[in-house]
Image 1 (tube, rainbow, N blue to C red):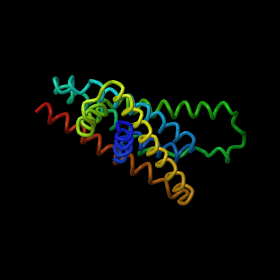
Image 2 (image 1 turned 120 degrees about the vertical axis):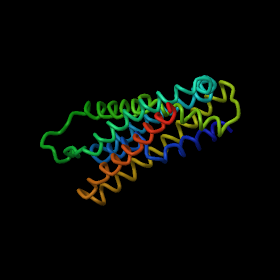
Image 3 (image 1 turned 60 degrees about the horizontal axis):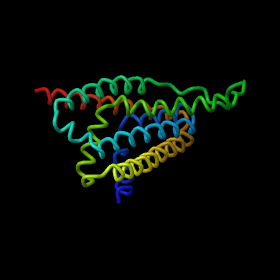
Image 4 (image 1 turned 30 degrees about the vertical axis):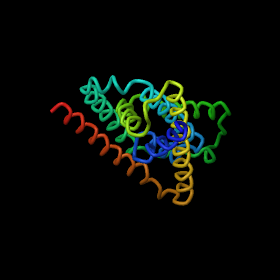
Length: 209
């Protein structure tokens, strides 16, 4: 039951515009499908970590010190505002098949590592994510033992990664169909992410007031 609940939570929480969704779209559009999948894998691992913490004991701590929420939202809003701005201004890189010199295989591995680190960092450096998971855990699952919390977190990983992989696939297909006209995609998503960042900053202000 906890595994299935985690899978549902992982997929559903990935649907709204968020930093990893943006990074997956950006990687699939400007780089490669391989890098986009690596970004999704990193984001899913971070979601698994935060959801596991929410299921296994962080919730009472955050409920005891509600002022921490304001700090977490402020940090997240600042980080995502900068990331959204950089995404909106991004330009596609030169596709590998258009380069005159072939890249060595080691670059493929480096690209995967870079994508994974980006996905991981975008969640870990977005501390409001743990607040989100605390809320999700509190609403979706009953009090869990450590083992049940682990099953929930593994389910979150599966659901989250499935969603990010789907986003990468759809972006790759869209890029192939639209060609150069797809340049508006990262700009639109970057702008949406900046709006979301302003929302997080506003929530931080509300907590303080």
